Length: 117
Image 1: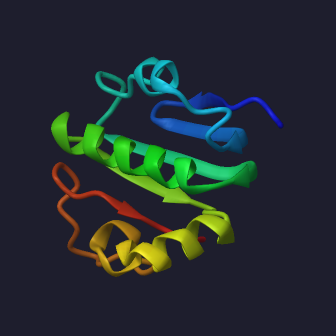
Image 2 (image 1 turned 180 degrees about the horizontal axis):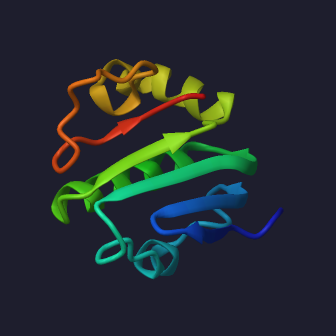
């Protein structure tokens, strides 16, 4: 098990490292990430995710809900294949949040999507 860390790399840019699993994500984890007030554009790079399960998908959904509530634009990049497969199983990949191609006319204030690069 690799501890979950979210590292801010710049204004609104974050890198996730470690495991996105039931053993690394808890209520304290959810409450510890406050993206509001930083910028209207949040980018979360999942390159450093070593392992994931459905808790990782749940965390991403919570971040999407948080972004909507705070009127932020959130982009996930380098999504591990495991997470994409979980999204497909649940049908979430068919929503705009899990779109692999982003429309040019996205409303930056109110839209949320996940991008694979």
